[in-house]
Length: 378
Image 1: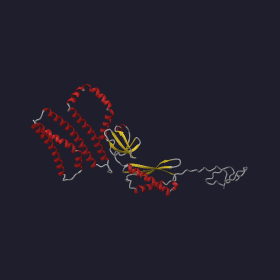
Image 2: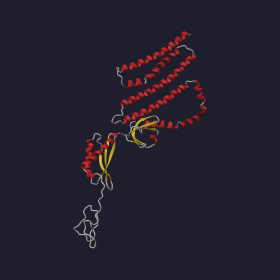
Image 3: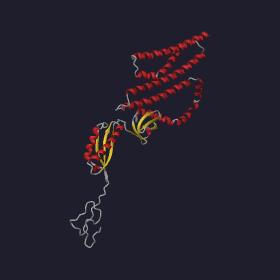
Image 4: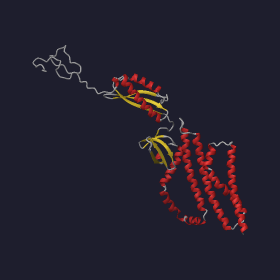
C-alpha cells in the first residue's frame, strides 16, 4: 500500500514538475527565437501570461498522468475536482492576460500623443471596453464552472429552478442600472460617440476623456479635477465632442473697438500675427465686424489650430497682440465714451458772424443777446 502511494505521489509530482519544465523551455525558446531581444510582446507576455501558464502546465501534466496511476476512487475524484478548478481559473486568467497583451501592443503601435491620433483613440477605446467586457464574461463563466463542480451546489441549483422566474424578475430589477451601463459600454465600444482622449464639454465642464470603464467614464477637467459619469450618460444625454472626426478646431477672439478703428489695417495685422505664430496651422483665418453697437464695433478674429489646447493659447495670443497694436499704433480705435452735445438752436437776432464754439454747452455764451434781453453777466 505504501509503495502504491509513493508511486502515485512520485508520478503526479513528476508530471507537475514536467509541466513546469515545459513552460520554462517554451519561454526560453521564445526568447531564443527573438535572438535574446526582449521586445514589447515578450515583455508583455512575461508580465501577464507567465503566472497563468505556470498554473496550467503542471495541471495539464497531472491530468495526463492521473489515469495511469492507481489510487483510491475518492482520491481520484478529489484530484479531478482540483484539476477542474485549476483549469477553470487558469484558462480565465490566461484569457484576461492575453487581453492585456493586446492592449499593450495597441498602446505601443497607436500612440495617443501623436498629432493626428483619431485612429489611435478609436482603437484604445475599443480595446479598453472590450477587455473589461471579456474579463467580466470570463470571470462569470469560470465561477460557474467552479461552483457546478461541487455536487451539493448542483443539487441546490436544481431545486431552485422552480423559483427561477421570480428570482430572475427581482434580480433583473435590482441589476437594471448595472445592465444598462454594461450595454451602453458595449454600444460605445462599437459606435464610438466618445473615444479615449476626446475633448468634450459635459455638464458645463471642458475636459478630456481619460478613462472609459465598463460602467463609468472619467473626464479629466482642465483644472485637473476628475468628473466621473455613468457610461449610459453619453448615450442618453447631449454633450459636445470637439474631436469627433479630427482634433483641429476653429477658435475666435472678440474685440470691441471705436467706430474710427481702421478695420483693413487691423485685418492685415492679424494676418501678420498668425503667420509669425507657431500655434497657427495655416488652414483658415479671417477678421470680420460681427456687431455694430451704439458706441462700439465688435470684431471677431477667426483662426484655426491643430487641437483645442493650442487653439486656446492662440486665441489669447492674438487678443493680447491686437490690443498692444491698437494701443501703440491706433489709440483712437480703442473704445471710449463720447459726451458730444448737439449744437444749440439759433435765436432771433443772433449775429450771422457769431457762432457757437464746438463743444460749447453754456446757453447764450458767445452769442449776441436779442433786443430787450439783458446781456449775461460774469
